[in-house]
Length: 80
Image: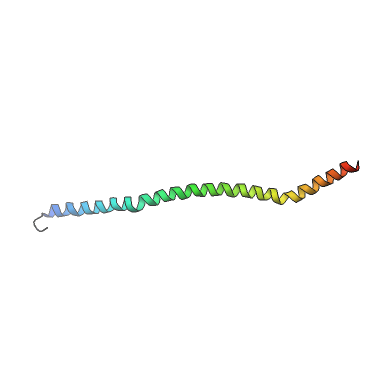
C-alpha cells in the first residue's frame, strides 16, 4: 500500500466507495422496493375485498327490513 501513489490511493478509495454504494443498492434497496411492490398489490386486493364485504354486510343488515316489507305485501295480497 505504501508503494502506491497518492492518485492511486484516491482511485482505490473512490472504487471502494462505489462498490459499497452498489452493494448497498443490491442488498438493501432493491429487495425493499420489491417487497413494497408486493405489499402494495396485497393492499389493493384487501381493499377490494373490504368493499365487497361491506356491501354484503349492508345486504345482511337490510334483510330483516326487506323481509318485513315482503311479508306485509304478501299479507295484503293474501287478504285480497
